[in-house]
Length: 470
Ligand SMILES: [Zn+2]
Image 1 (cartoon, rainbow, N blue to C red):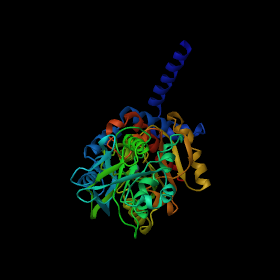
Image 2: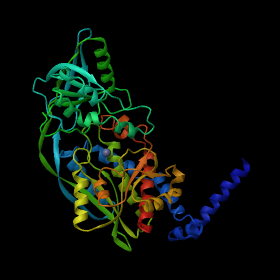
Image 3: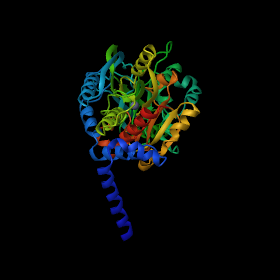
Image 4: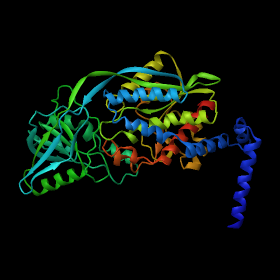
């Protein structure tokens, strides 16, 4: 114990001496001598993020604007907030990239679903329309419910499905360690449930919420219709509601539900991506993009999805600036609009990048929640992948050194299709779907230190890419 304490004081003394004897610009030289370049810079970024990080404060400001569904006044306010914040933080070339976005509104009147059971009487279900759904008639739709676990099972029902409300009740697989995999294995019910229900003559779709948590909070999310297939209303019910409905269906021959939705789709609305930069000192025409999406669903305030990724990207640039680290290449923060129900922002960005022949070195996206970072998911060729993996030691101190192959993120996917390496920040995944697309996704669900560590990981990666290229 004693010797350990002496050792600590010794280290402290060394740090103090180094602080006084070395100018900040000598970080890299010191590190190259160890054959572990950027180690000291990475440590300094982490220390600064934890000691005086601004990400949580920025997230508080952003989420105070309210939910930011594309086309809403809150989304417009978030665009203005981003522009203002980037300017205030001293970023360069702050600008809006205008784009038209879909404009869907949940509706002025409360949405509702009520079970009518022979043994239990009427029981309300907590429900919310899926994003993009049509409304029900004013009095709602009333019909018997049939439960299925898959589209294949639905197809076997034949006539039995006609005129019914189709209840999709396949849970996210709890045995998957990666919850995003579990989500991927269940989300077809939300995305295409209305189409499949209508194809067999169903009159509405009720979908079990995409969450591993058992609670009474419904989770919304995107859904599609298909040309030539009738548009039927679609709503999510909570996991508690789904279990109750399933239990009643097992006990009783017929269970009826009344569903009422009042959503509306308006013409596309003007909106924008927001861009700001730390301009490179040597190769300013070479760009590293780091971003998240500014829009959210209209439940909760999009704190994890994706307020966290937005403020972490802003914070990454702010940290580098605060430490007076001058990137050789340009680091550009992008607040993408409309990831949730259109991806128009991501597409517009890639289109403009191609038209103006900008050279993108890499695109990094943070859109998996503001939890403690664990690594990066990388979509590029094997040479670049190996280079990135070679820098994993920089993230070991914060347990974020896992660098593996996988998708970068939705907003940067159009850029990746043009050949730009895509990188996704990967945080700890167990709790994300507790909050995702629901009233649970508020700033109280975000931990400040975890958020800061994610921002530090982004800052380190951006800086190394800006200095070394890829
Ligand atoms: Zn998201």
